[in-house]
Image (cartoon, rainbow, N blue to C red; front, side, top):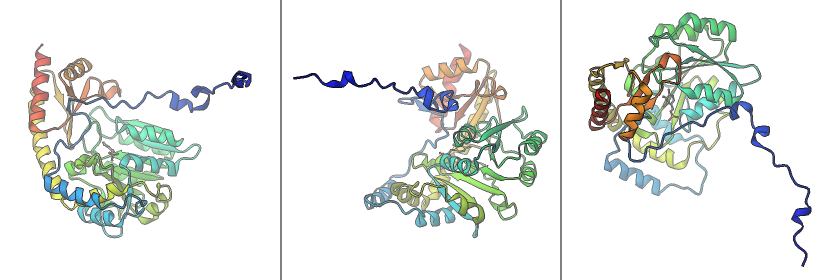
Length: 369
Ligand SMILES: *Cc1c(COP(=O)(O)O)cnc(C)c1O
């Protein structure tokens, strides 16, 4: 029997990823999500509390009935009705759902991106704005915040004049700095912007402040929120609110089945018990203020004001402190290499009082040693 003829085949030169993929993708380092197994997890702004057993049982019953053989309803009417009621979405304001607000950021970037389009944000802020703008093929321009993390209005106005951005992102409150920007500065930016401005209110449940009430007055404004920080990060549900003239167009870019059946059902159940999540948020706010007080008493530590469920703080030798906390099974976020304004800065998510105490105890030990 003759041997297989494989060796006679003209050798195929396997294409190397470097020759195929976009240089900006090759240049990226992978989005690092630290392994949190067995850790006190205070790195990702998650709600530390689980749902009451009665709500879990109700989710289980709803999910057990889910028609998983069918595609989800792309308009998710039940969930949208529930969201409108729970989030006080004004009548006449449109609602677009995303698989997390990350997907909505991507959709917005895809909808505006063409050769030469510019997306403007501030820095430091949520890194997905820059990343998803780049994936969409747009140019991202990040305008530095002032050293106290307030908006640099003159620099933003200059960026608007120079780049005529199709899209702008402002997180309110901002992540990772935690502060709310001056409302009147935001209003002047929205008025000056030649394109769409997205107010990202991911931390609304903690901050209370919102631009929802301004949607009818400011025609180029849309407001984005998520259920993630409210306690449902695992469900992946974000939503965008704005005028129908914008949302009807943006909806064409949305993947029709982006909100799966299980998420639609589970979110609808949990939102009917929104008071539970809001009660947890109140507990987190109390714990945040206690943590801020105790943290600012640690020698060398500066805590920045926060309207969210995390605290940004500066500490000498931040990366060493971060590593030492990690060695003690406490996971927070090291931001010190992320931006010059964040030199020696770490971010801790507010956990349960017991978790916060573990974090503080470990930090005090590390600082004293
Ligand atoms: C966490 C966060 C998001 C992402 O939320 P998902 O809905 O979980 O994708 C968006 N914006 C900001 C500012 C955030 O901090």
